[in-house]
Image (tube, rainbow, N blue to C red; front, side, top):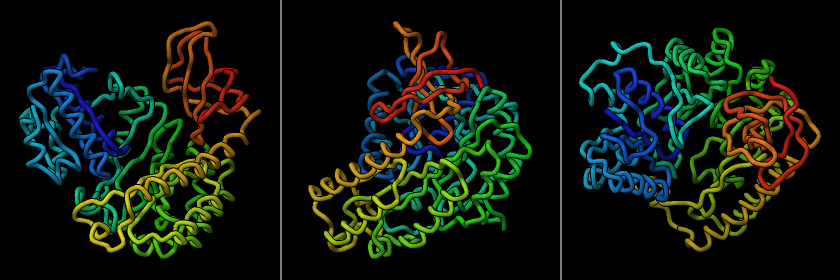
Length: 423
């Protein structure tokens, strides 16, 4: 059977779809790059914003238009709206998040444990990755008032160190050069069996030869100053994504975030002291309910003070079933969008400033994509350890290779470089 896989949203969704691909392949089925030739499609949906939910529905409709008559819908939007998912064209089965881990074996009516080893092969088409996203945790015990993910994903639960390392070794054997640990609430890994993310990271670095290990989003309240000593190991990439959501203390209280501007400031300072050249990126919400002009100004000033290396700005989107959707003082949509643009400009300015610091430096780059050969050779695009996006030309394709690169200039949102030598 030919199977097309697609995913919307977070890195955790990407990790899950890659696991499904391995399981389908192990059972003898083919993963195809486009839906036109597929007998079946699986779509991992997202609901973090109303736009993500709309994108999820759009992807399913596009696949149906391509002629796929059997579509399996899963993921967060599907979990929240199972009946609406079944009403979409081509959807024959809905699998909610609590059953997602068994999706492939239920479809095939075949126990997955009989299908080992699950060799990792990068997904074809748009999802061809050099980095392997490894799910280490699911669910969330936080109750941030804007977030529907807790409802869609359920309570926090961690995978064992042994299972995670097994997945990592499989990914490395399949050619992955970088491992990214993912979870809904990654920093809570181990809380359900009296451990801490620190122990998982140490075990991975000790028991595997992973060249590059990266962490996805970490809530600031899960970290202490001592956590950053892990970066003494240079295989751990100097990039921290710490969601702030607002730089205003009163807004953070309404969001039920377990941090304050002062504690966040201290954490960032500790990270920058311990990890040379660390890139700290963040998420910000614009137009949260009740946000006054003074609160927005306070948040904007704090964002500018932090000098983030980049980040994402989300226009507040009311999600039914969340506390924030019921709050008084909903900000008008046009004002939310205006504040989004202002915050986005501030983050782009600090990101440019961060990139400029590396002009003239030599750094290792993992090449993620290769475009057609032109006058100067093959155009490569990849990432440094601290998440700088780099373009350079090579005499031959270098996809999934790591090269030493001289960074010569900044061009828009990336660096221009010259490849010096391999490794």
